[in-house]
Length: 359
Image (cartoon, rainbow, N blue to C red; front, side, top):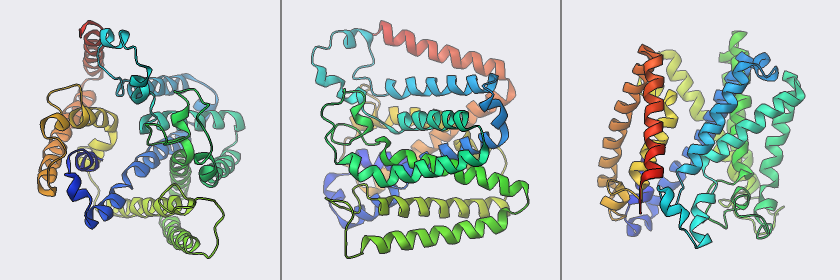
């Protein structure tokens, strides 16, 4: 994720026009689906462990909803035209708010997680939930070309980005939410198989199914007929979705196999980044894309770097993000009350800065 953002923001446009960047873009294009898949997988594990607490709307349920609201606020805060209440209050051009309205990956994660939890509340049966989520996820994929080609100009500005990329939006609900639903189902079932001691056999079957899915999707792409008008493989086709989904599952299984053979401690890079992903995501975005801050990469370097220079910045930023995540992770483990105090103090400073910062 860090590498993708650094390269996209800073690589020289003339280098992006070369063939290697096309290959790199495909590889980097797996990052966002994987991020959504992992968010869904975390919910899948939670549903497996806390099903009764969630559908019973007990204390954990409300804590979970509150956290989603918190992430939703952060998601939109990252797209404020200016980090200043004074500047925002004096905006007269409505087009300035287009960036704020855009649907980014955090918004999709929050809405998709909320929908999935509500679905569990409605069906209240594990097997029915699995079937319903699978049907909805598949429907999202196959209806995507229709939704994305439909006229959304009549929608209100803050809803429209969730249905189209024709405005400043990269992650409409269709089909991105399906990656999260898929992650939820895969993780939930994986935990069930692990409890039965059958995860090894199931992992092999899942790997085989993923390979078959990838082959079938590619075969469908070269079929001598088209179901959708204006068909394009890379433009949100179901085939492209299933290829990426299959590759993500295969990568997941490879990492699981690695983790089984070489167990890592709680302070490993993967573990720390995984548990502090929200913090790392927000901070690294501000450093790379913080157009309103002089220290940001886009203002310091601009898009004129080569691959080696981008790689150097990626390594440095990753090391800094790991150090930050490691310190915060250890602080929470050492003394939760102190960590909470620090968290509220930092958030308070950010809010105060937003309101007192002038033009």
